[in-house]
Image 1 (cartoon, rainbow, N blue to C red):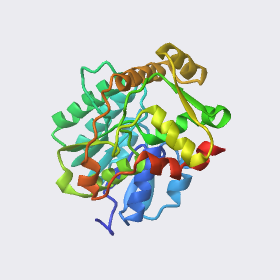
Image 2 (spheres, rainbow, N blue to C red):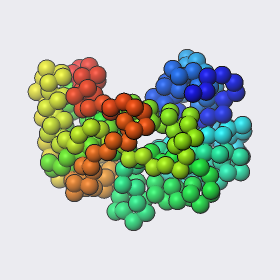
Image 3 (cartoon, rainbow, N blue to C red):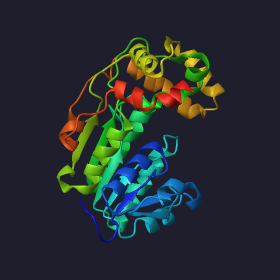
Image 4 (cartoon, helix red, strand yellow):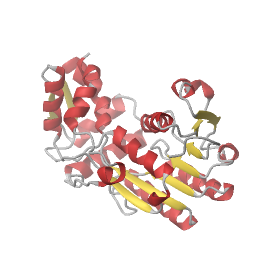
Length: 293
């Protein structure tokens, strides 16, 4: 891996869960990189990382993106999943092409497909196609449901010992974001990952009921999963102040899980990193303090 010299890697989405983990792992590997943030005030943790240079940029401001991309050869592309994501990412690809970027590592999603009934999967697939059409080198990371996504249920788990979703007893090969980041770091630092698609899963497909069991074992308290209707889940998301577009997308996402479309297990993480991915028990053990309090 690169250990000295000028930073030629740009990390977008750098203050989010995955972007932060990618940044931490690059820093640990002594790889110089730039982390793009909307404002320097957001970047307290990033500022403490060796080999990290903070640059400001806003996906809605093309000039700021082009400035952030100066001297960059490889970019990690990740935005929030909003109704603006497709345009923001497409504009980024255009700016990257214009700025002389050679390789984009795009954070995509499991089962990305332009014809999917899930809006998230449609926009990811459309952006993937735009990257291919740009003739830039690409690496697409398509992770399944994040294990850390369970932290979104932390409130009811802590207060009631319960969490709720419209997913039935479907098995899902959920993946730890630490493994997603490890694959991203390999892709950002090695040309052998050019023009590859990696489908990223954990080592086993398990139900939400089984997840509850692992969380119960890790925390020492009874935690139960309760299946609910899509309508009930939608109302809960709106009550929790999720934007309507995102809430509707999450309902589509969970319907995709409930149909059993996310149960396949791959070995792409081990093939790329040389290490077996985290299983859900390890995740539950490592994050138990957040679910127990």
